[in-house]
Image 1 (cartoon, rainbow, N blue to C red):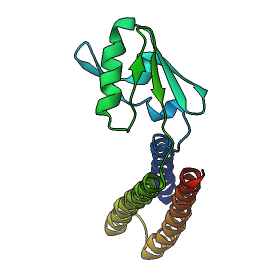
Image 2 (cartoon, one colour):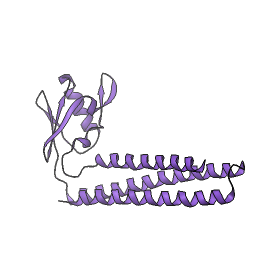
Image 3 (cartoon, rainbow, N blue to C red):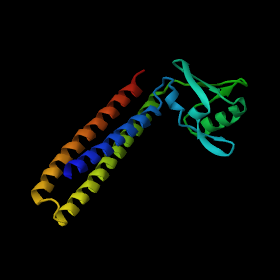
Image 4 (cartoon, rainbow, N blue to C red):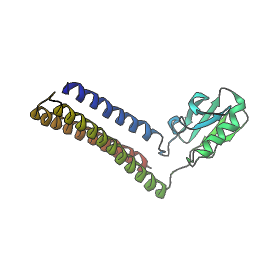
Length: 185
């Protein structure tokens, strides 16, 4: 019972770490990567749709993204979606494809992005603490229902804390790695 609960908790923590990794891909590093715009929502026939479902996104050069829409009539919508996403990017089209030049990051912008990364790491840690709180509540309920002993609960709490520490360290490491990437010129 406790092992199942710990396993479920670890799965939730893994999902938090994966979500953080995906979130970091959308933070600009001065290098063109399709992940910067993949999740940009474009209004397509009145329905918000992720850009990656409407076009092929490639990075032929380190400072340029090329977006080839499946339906050429969506070019204006794609441009509008990128501008509304507030990524600091200015798309241009030639009627068939959208080119998005990726400007070099200034020192001020790098520091700003570094703060964004730190804030997102802290949000991830808050998510981990919420997961811990939920599990502790379940453990207390098990103990109150006499399904587990007090000793079992305390051992499970220790195991839970080790899990939290491991995933918090993992989030910190991901944040530091992304900060180094941002600060790299």
